[in-house]
Amino acid sequence: MSSEISAANGNGNCLGWAARDASGVLSPYKFNRRNVQADDVSIKITHCGVCYAEVVWPRNKHGDATYPMVPGHEIVGIVQEVGPNVHRFKVGDHVGVGTYTNSCRDCEYCNDGQEVYCDKGAVFTYNRFDYNGTITHGGFSTFTVVHERYCFKIPEDDYPLASAAPLLCAGITVYAPMMDHKMNQPGKSLGVIGLGGLGHMAVKFGKALGLQVTVFSTSMSKKDEALTLLGADNFVISSNRDQMKALAKSLDFIIDTASGDHPFDEYMSLLKTAGVLVLVGAPSEIKLSPISLIMGKRSITGSATGGTKQIQEMINFCAAHKIYPNIEVVPIQYVNEAIERLINKDVKYRFVVDIENSLK
Image (cartoon, rainbow, N blue to C red; front, side):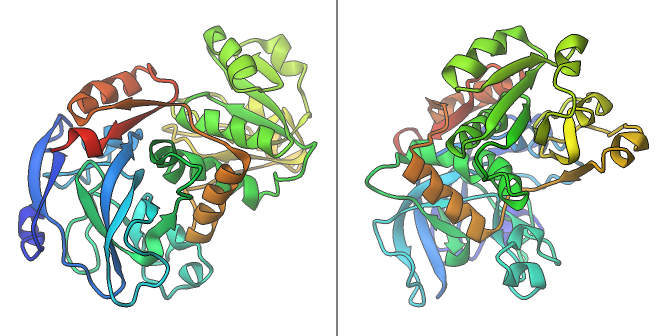
């Protein structure tokens, strides 16, 4: 079913930027959002972050693309209409929408507020068929309509909407596993592999939680950023064997944000007994010796974004501790260049598209 047909029963035109084919190039595209239902919130989008998903899905890296495709899943904006059953939000509220906009709402994970792990599969914010058969379209558009369960309050007085956008994917992707593995205890030691959109948020969360934070990178150019700009306690060049050996059995937890292929045994040796390495990046394969796990009772695990409870908790935590992503705000007309720069790691540390002032 094409997105034009699936959206045919909407209540008016929505202007977005869409990919038409696997080139991933985005250009203006008009489509229809659904009518506001009883439990829905209609949101005028002001900003949307640019995630690496905007490389993967528009360019059909997973072979599951449906075109035209409107990307963007770090969405923030202002409520412009609510359905009659909505009581958590009112017109004028600042809100955010993350990486998924629906789930079965009946399985054990949905009932526990972990909708991202829904047994029937969370419906992603774009490039997915919703339960009603329509194709979801993302935040590179003027407005969206979402069930209130998947909307999150953003404090209006002290948290800028542009800064809030990256929290909805980059922020929660590192916050969730830190909470799941009890890395909210001051004095614990955290390792962060990679210093991009996700990694820089992991450092910020780690310092706010009172952790000892070590950043691992392949580039010496990241050292000043890690130590001075972000406040990490230690910086290690991962290819330097002496630096790596000096940290043997010293870390409680490692967040691996790197998507490029890299060795794992060296990092596992840095974990204390029963330490955990969590993957939030997506290398093409994982290779390690079983001994790296067995002898130190260590484990390697993965984590997606987070459930609705954790997302709201994280937003509140960022507001309370004045944690803001480092962003570069760009107009929608620059989004293709921004994506190319993202591929080339030429951003510190997250692009945010100014939808409100440039998409007209």
